[in-house]
Length: 344
Image 1 (cartoon, helix red, strand yellow):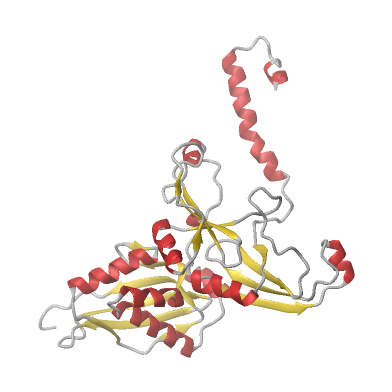
Image 2 (cartoon, rainbow, N blue to C red):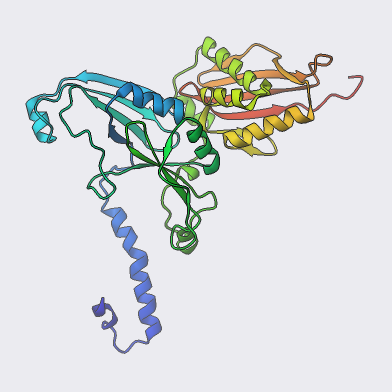
């Protein structure tokens, strides 16, 4: 770097400073140009597990993710085992790909009669050590996992200085001992304020599902699937017991779902629970019921509803539009009709 400052000995220090900053500004462009042609980003992360069914159940029932594809069992020949430094006696492999919200997928591998090490890598061992999941509500996520019996490795850590100031994180363990992390920084991190042009990718910045993009990437829904989805949707909105409601939420809505009203957006289960509770508090005895048959179109579901007490079941009417991905509501658009005036 000293050569840079000696290029123009006669130039003032201000010129040198500007030239130095210009070199720094151009440097990231060279890195981008050197990237592998066609490379876009991380598709999935592979994880070996001792029990595939246990791992799938954990990612599905505890974390609320969705298993999609399965391959195997596939026998592995000697050449493959040698290339991947595997033990000769290890048996066939079965893999399962799990959709983990907005971000890279997770591929779970199980080897029959595995002769590999059953010891999880330590924090200072070589290799990948953990997977971090972003949450918009860390407190609620921690409470949910603790209620499921998940072991945490300490309390949430709040970063108050340095590049990651604004982030809160905490580690937890899977039933088979792998380390995972929850992280949250809804207001961003400190480095983003100092370097606004260079940002790390984050699920919190991922674009929500839209009708146009999802229709081409999600399988079409059958009428029976759409009806079942709406039935669970109504059970959630009519349920007064939050514990019972919480059991239905991950079965019906994607973990990163959004409910979009004309005037506000709900983007996590905690906010949704609060909204439903407030609705029942202000309007006791009100019940949501179907107003028309459910209509499905590819991965879209249109549902007209009415809401009111037994004496006036149509006190409030409206329509819900679901964007569905992998059998769960990704985005819910709510249309509430203007109340009709008396005599009309």
